[in-house]
Length: 634
Image 1 (cartoon, one colour):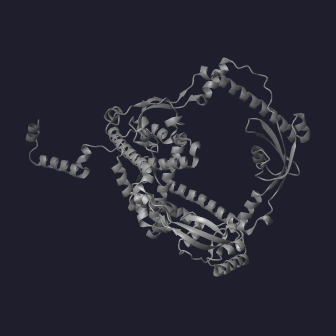
Image 2 (cartoon, one colour; image 1 turned 90 degrees about the horizontal axis):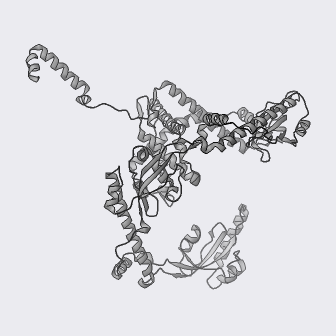
């Protein structure tokens, strides 16, 4: 066939065709004939892609922050809800819009701003000062280089440039604050009574009614998604060591780590305390200092105990001449500590200020640090040796488990055979976890992750703390499913009856409301139901003794007109109803607002206005930018 083509393609036609082929290959790239592009972004903002990795990293950050803040109350299912996923993605889109706007407006984060922010992070400081070695060590523990971290900081600062500029341009007038304060501190005279839940007379529920209600509210009767796991566990506490340390091993360790067993230097000290009251005036502070200085100038080792008995305000030590006993570094507050360990034996200090007042110190003796003998610390060394060996063995085994399960991502069998570790199983559990290992949120989160649950892979090594780690894989997966009607029949029936009670209570409340709006006396209407009418003069928006539902409704009602009360019925948290009336409305008294409160309010309102203006700015950017969202990739 090739020969036939060769025979036909000769002369100028062959040159033209060949030229076209060469042009196509050079223009489009030969790789276009062998590969096709597959989009993986979760959103496209203009020409910029937000990748699945970026989205997942942000989701993990928010999840970890929520776990740290909420502890045992953390609910991981929140982050699996479509609305939560969409909110996280929307945050990333907003940030990208701001970054693109920065670029168009020529706004940049300076190197000085990045440096100053990093220098102010406490984790990178030693004695209150930025320390470069600590900085590099902390980042290395997080598998980050300084350059990577500085890029993260710069990106974080860049997304705040425009919001801060917008907020700085907002202003709040006195009239704005007066209107807000008048509303915030508004007082309302109100009356209200609670209606008892009506007795239900119609308790008959047919099979057809049960069936219809069940179908209409099926989402209320679902079994949660569940999984069971296979897992391999490495627990340092269960590891058996091959051999016990010899006496020579222990002695060598003692010599290598002798500094560990040096007793800290101790100082025998007495003191005289001149108390300074809390919230002391400047005159009181000066008087206390003058008294302490006088004592310090007069005190000698020979008469220190006598002076302490006569002058010290420390009742616990004055009877023993101010004796505080032997102290080690770090036992007292920093100022006391610094002064004590800068004294020479027999020396009396100048006054030292602490939270209690001024101390005059007398260093009576010094006991230098000495190493404890081998015999005294042998048991500790032996225990530490075994702990270190167990840690080493755990790290070795955990590393091999990681390698084996990574090389064989679809099975735990190869790792179990290679390491002689059993494959264990769990029962079914939901995203809320369970007991034992299943109480560990990190494990539960991994079990329901896309990589483990959807892709069917082994997890990575999950560190459960204290030399305890597992690798898991899903054994069984039970999707969310409706519970059969036969199983939830009693619950369905009770919900139907509850709805009937609420409907009857609502009908009754509406009837009473209608009577009040026609002019009947509220006291008489309340008495007709057997309820007690309660009167609350000058109620404010936050009032503990009033039900929140009643209070909220009372402040939503319009102002009374021509002395006529405004009425409403309100549903309470337990499904019952109450009736509320507003008789009078008074604005807040602005004369009671202090200048400090007004200043604080002005700042808060400016921040709120700035947030609203920033939101509107971002919405305007969205309207001008083409944004594509791949919801199926979330």
